[in-house]
Amino acid sequence: MNECIFCKIIKGEIPSKKIYEDDKVLAFMDINPVVDGHVLIIPKEHYEDFTVLSEEIVTHIYNIANKLTKELMTKLDSKGLTLTVNYGDAQEVKHFHLHLLPNYHIHKKEKSVDEIYEILK
Ligand code: 5GP
Ligand code: ZN
Image (cartoon, rainbow, N blue to C red; front, side, top):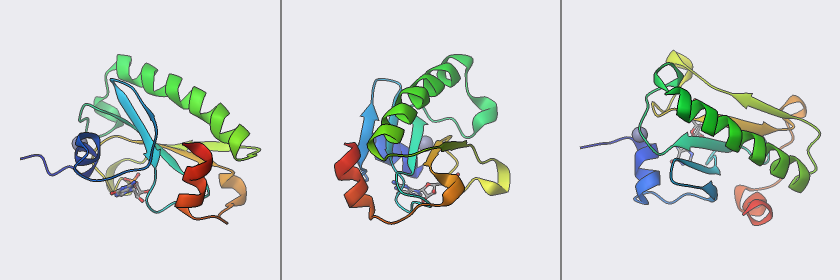
């Protein structure tokens, strides 16, 4: 049985605030944002971490990151955005995910996840 929390989100067994979805990836709001607009992009196929991703999915994830970066920066009036991948002990959820962190350099966190989701969805 697959206990992976992000696989459960993909299957709809755990709710999430989705902002983008296609046949290969899902992007949704982080449940515990470190900044306003903290979004995660995950492959729908379970890959434990960045070292085992296929080249095809890396390219696709970064193409979607490019598209979402522009959307997030426009909608949230963000002047910058940080992309982060954690690995090893730094990675809490063992299903690869790319963090999109608008205005990370100024740690802007003023709104709730629901307020931001209303802007982004
Ligand atoms: P990591 O340290 O693995 O790179 O980060 C995992 C991220 O997943 C954290 O920012 C955490 O808040 C987020 N997260 C963990 N569980 C859930 C969940 O059930 N739903 C959502 N939306 N985010 C989650
Ligand atoms: Zn998984």
